[in-house]
Image (cartoon, rainbow, N blue to C red; front, side, top):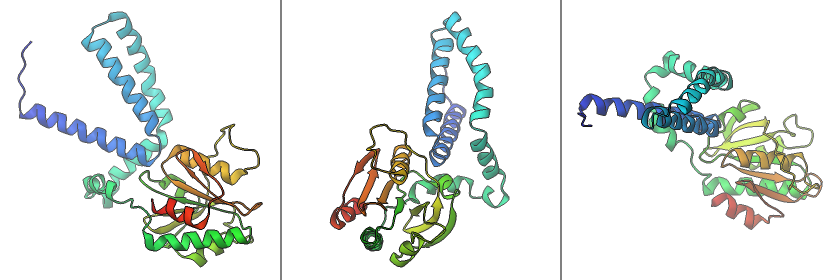
Length: 254
């Protein structure tokens, strides 16, 4: 079958691609990307079965799932949909809606070398004094929802500030610190806890939280043990234990 492809079709495809890309970036920001990919995969399979192969029974079955699934998507993604609509409707963001889409990929930079040593030195001093700490370095996956669970700081990376936040009598001592774009964004944040049974029992809740955030994002989570004074790092769901200052600096700079 022959069909014509005009400028209207090209614009249509471009607009659909932009919408899908924006939703992809937004879902990655809220760390619900896996559910978005799963939903998109289901839709593609449904269209292929019912429209291309024209399988009536399978198509009817998928149609029933889609009818119920639309309501399920609204329930599952209600928080993300609310944020999405708020961002589109907020007056001060209307002019920068496309700008947010374009510049978002360039916002998250690696921790620069100049800000590496304050983190390393703070961890070494806290390890020497057996002061527990949990520091999360944001990379490509935004951690805005994690930042919202703690107290926002938005200060330059500073060794004394890091040590004071994790001082044993500090009210922010038990939470996690989030460092993004070379700034301390927040402290006292709550992280998802990993339920991996392979984690050694001698590792406490800080280590499980570090493992959890490393499994849900590409962030680097640095842990200073309050019991042993040892420094560890969780990266991509794996632990690097008993790190020296040189090893910790290499991990951050990499």
